Structures are given as C-alpha cells and as structure tokens.
Length: 456
Image (tube, rainbow, N blue to C red; front, side, top):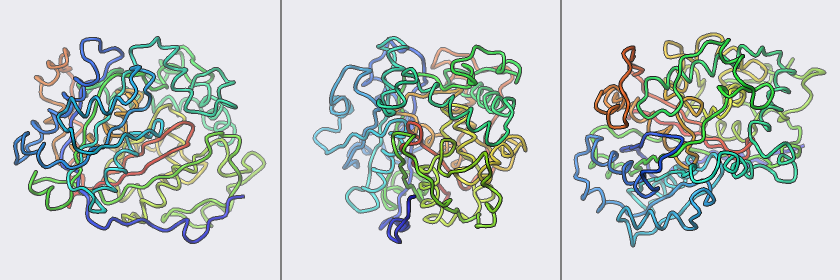
C-alpha cells in the first residue's frame, strides 16, 4: 500500500506569476504531405505572433524570447532524432537555449509545465512552447505500434500493440464495477464529434446518434471507432511570460494560476491499493460506501492515480474548492470515451463510481454547468500527440479572452484550410468565462498534468 509522507503532498508554488499570452494552431489532418514539420510549426508560430492582437511586432516578440520548450511524442514518426533542434533553427531562435520534453500523451502538458517552471523561477521571462507530431509517414498499423510502445512492453503489448485494446479492458472493468450502460459512453462520443463540427481545425467532426456509435465497427470490445481518438498531423504554439513581459505583449494576458503533474506505474498490473486521496470537495464520508465485492481496490484498473495527484496539487495551489462550481470550461484528454468518464471521477467532477452522472446530467454540455471539450476533444478534432496538451490550452486561452469566435467563426479561416464554414454553425463561446482547466494525459495513466487558467 502506498503511504504518503508529509513532503510528498507539499503544494507547489510559483515564485513569480506566470501568464499565457498568445496561441497558434495549424489545422489537423490524417495526412499532411504538402508541409513538413518545420513548416507546420512555423504556421502555428505565425498565428500566435500575428493574429493574437499583440502590442508588439513579430520581430519584437522574437527578440523577447529567452528560452524555448519543444514537445514531440516520438522521433519514430518523422525518422528524425533531435527534431526539436531542427525546428528551433528553422523558427529563428538559434542560439537561444531549448529543451525537448517527452512524456507520452501528456507531452504537451508537461512541456507547458516545464516552461511555467522556467518563468516562475525567473530563469526566463518569455517562453514559446512548440508542439507537433508527424504521424503520416508510416502506415496506421505501424503508427499504432509506435504509440502502444508508450505502455509497458512486458505487459500491455501482449494485448495487441494497440491502445484501444488497453483501454477496452479498462472499459469492461469500469462497466462491471459501476454498472454503466454503453449508451453513456456513446453520449461522450456524440458530444465531442458534434463540437468538432464548429472548429475549422478539426479532423474528425460529425453529427452522430447514440445508435450510430453503438452500431459502428468495434475496434476493441466495447470501444467502437467513433469512441477512439484520431491519429493526426499538426502543430500548436503557446507563449508563456512573466507579468511584466505579458502586459508588454498584450492587454489580455491570462494567468496560469497552477499547473501540476502526477504519475503512476507504467505497468498497470503494478498499481497498488491505497486510501483515496481526497480532493477539497470530498471527505471520508464521500466514500464510506464505495468499496464492495465489485470494487475492492483503489487505484485499481479503472481509475488514474496520476490524474488525482495532479488535480490534488493544482486545486490546492489555485484555491479550487469545487471544480464544477469553480471552473467555467474544461478540456479533458478524451483519448477514448472510457478515459473521459474515468477522468470525471479522478478530478472530482463526481465521486468515484458516479462519473456517469456528469455526462448524463447535461453538466458537460455547452449549456451545462461545466462545458467540457468544446474544442471537439481528441475524439473529434485531433491527437497530434506532441501538440495535444498545448492545443487544449490554446483553446482555453481564446475562450477566456472572449476570442473563440475570432478563431473559429470567420469564414476565411475555414477557407484557409480548404473547408467551408457549416451553414448550421453555432458559436461555442462561453460567455463570461473566468476560469478554466485542462487535463493532459499519457499512456494508461502514467503521466498527467492539470493546468488551471484564470482571468486576472
């Protein structure tokens, strides 16, 4: 059994405030043969410095940067070691220092954490975080095998070198423990695919019924294709800065009040029983009836201790008492419908065992108490792994700045990516949003970051 010492649960703090200043994206596609990775990163960087209403010119932005963080999941896809060095040179940041981060699916979130640490410590005062993934230079089967290598090759790989198979087992166990109908998981897929219809950046939009999802071809029982994230190509850029620099760059900086990380064993079979780590909105009374003959261990095979750890630290760092009440918008790492509902519980949207209530109640929808994955999520929009966690925060930045329509509703932006703005387009701008949260997740829960953003 895991036992925490008092210093294990020490709440982090920033020595200096950290702000998010600007963000940029490419669109996301299954294949992008006309542009190489450097060109995609340049496109995202250009959007960040030219289209975010900054008070300084792109050249002035370049002269303010003093450290860079790069985010790429795997060198395998592009067959290029030190790809970050190549892109760093291409973007014109040489000879400034840089670092490349790799923590599986959470690489984007971990990269933001690394950049925030640099700013908060005073090491740097303007840091671009640049993420991308090149997943179209290998066959899909090979790409799945590369991604599956981020799980334990001594255990999970025996399940077929495919993440859907790893999560299918979790889905079966979760359904058994919590009596969750397939229709509930399908609701998540329908919601996120639909919201992707209103994003010019999305790869896999669509309007589906629950019946469509349930009758869709199964990837790994019980998960269908429509319940799984997409393999993508694309890039995302985010600028972090200290307070003085942030206000020199923009009149609308958004404060990064917290970003924290957690981990758990790579091999899921090694996850040991322990007392539930309580979030601020929970007490021991919350779980007095939790364990039964069907639910005997926590964290077991149907929850993520890394998510709970990251949320515990970030909530306490940012003063969050109840996430559903305190956040106005949320981005989760919905690699699969099952991982989404698991995350609802891990981050305290509902107690363990009751995650279904969050989606079934309507809370997770645009009109609900805590709109979730209005970006379309990984299921509807993208999973260009190194860019994913960065893209989530870019979307939240624009929401908190009240600029969602600027970056989604302009017909010319759709035309830029060879698309037509839908006739039934709807704005997903959350009016008056002041505080947001993003969860970046890796593997079968090996690494997770929880980022909290707030209007000053």
